[in-house]
Length: 452
Image 1 (cartoon, rainbow, N blue to C red):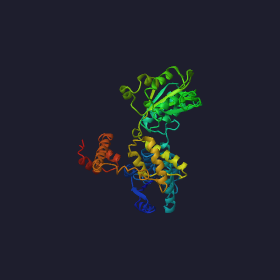
Image 2 (cartoon, rainbow, N blue to C red):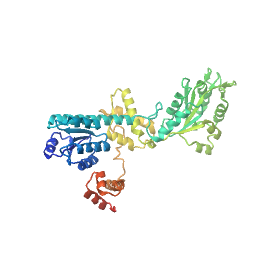
Image 3 (cartoon, rainbow, N blue to C red):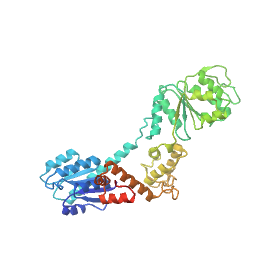
Image 4 (cartoon, rainbow, N blue to C red):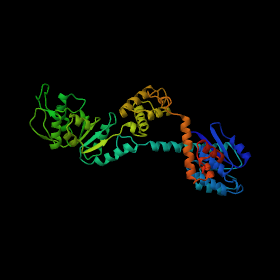
């Protein structure tokens, strides 16, 4: 954490003494009055502030100091304020802490004690920042196995929670690697069927001549090699959930039999004549465009309607803002634990690269890259190179960004917002921006903003 300290003290001698109390790793800024203090607070956002309550125009009292304290806590509530008081001003110190100050320090100046108090405040600020990051990094999905904070994925999760208790056929659509089976298992685990079997079969992974037997089972002697009776996935899922992955790849010859099962909830094993009633909930998934398959004649429209009483569309990882790093951190923690690699962490360049990458293979691709990185990294920090990803800076095409243009645009926007927020009051706008009025006039001239 960057250690930025703002010292608010009107005595030039004490200012000089206090400045030299701290090591080079602390960036120190000085203010001797309220207006300068607030301006520096806005500009540098210090983690810690030391505040002498006796400031002009009331250097012998505390009224101005308490006004500054109140304004700091309002503008930057996370800032740690250490109040500086005289030996006979314990009541002021107690009042300040009651208002929200973190600590107090009594004059005369003792460099060691001041350093200790300020360092303690920095540590407290860092702990609160890390705790805040941990809380924000926690998944809000509420769905087992699903890590998500993005609005698009949280919407899917809320829909899933509603449909899970309802015994309806569900079709999950999404690109390869988006976690369709994870959501199917979540539907099962949140349903009244959770204690019954969950049977999954990938329609694209089994040859056409074997898929019917895998789904419906077969009787002994039904075909060459059928030496005994075998129950199929549908029958094995009785009472529970049947997950048909990549249903878009189901052979056209098998689709009528699947449609009959969905309509009547009975099956016949291959080579059998007996109808067997089966009670299952059906969840299907595909990465293909079903409407396109229907128009091509390779997928039955009536089968589509039977399998899609409810449809869930899973967004690709690149469309889930903020989720990529969240998922990567969770995967790294799990994978490094399995490999006994200790507490591996993602470096800043790794997180930037993860955010900047499109993830065409979605979460499945990320799992592979995280596993490789956990093996290849030499230290505790996983880098973009370990992930075989380019840093976000390196991946930008030459000339695609102009830093000066970006800064100028941001500067102009900030000026316009400040003058609007201050209703045309230049002095107030300058304070909002943390700059002087002459500087603000210069910026107006630079960006062609009319002062009126």
